[in-house]
Image (tube, rainbow, N blue to C red; front, side, top):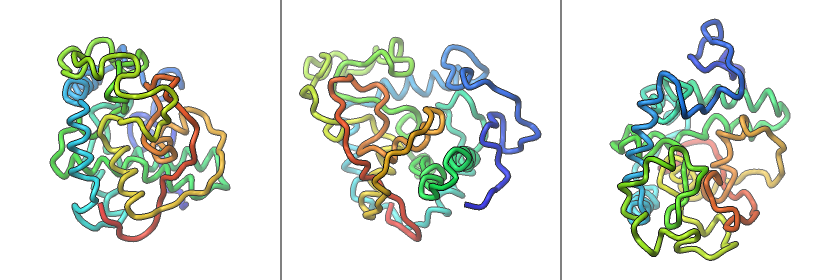
Length: 257
């Protein structure tokens, strides 16, 4: 991948000269910061409206990948118009973040060009916002629906009080509608760009190399949704997890979305 001059460590914009040094521990700070109100309100809406019924409705709506046909770079260019309101670290177009992620992965794994591509494309599913979806239905960290809210869910202790599933006995116990050790592929995650991108890749029959890549959590942040059968494992009750092959995929040229 050709270098585009984007600083993978910048949090304030695409220009390295304008970036402020920021320790790794300061990223993903959900307790303070100039963007906290915006971020909190996005998660509040997400955690209020993302229910089992909502996720199934969106899965049916977008699962056929019949919106349009477009190339990956076309979708990436569209992200010039999107600022992710769930992200506490950035206040610039998501396309810059895509290049930052790709450059960060390339720096850590220069011999894995497919992994660089994963980083570049990992947020393309956010184009749903530009197709009319509200940000709370697209951006942010995903979480399992249909079971008790886990402590690891962002703002999980203060944003689910108006979510009807928390009062439904089918979905409010520790395992809810699942069985222990059922596997990630059988867990229904909140709807968003990660799940949508996985559906697009699966529909277009993309494949990734079957190899284990030792990476830091910071580098993996962007790529994990594309490397697991569903989406991020963050927030899942541990007994539900089960290791499985990465069957997500990437490809070139125009694809149905």
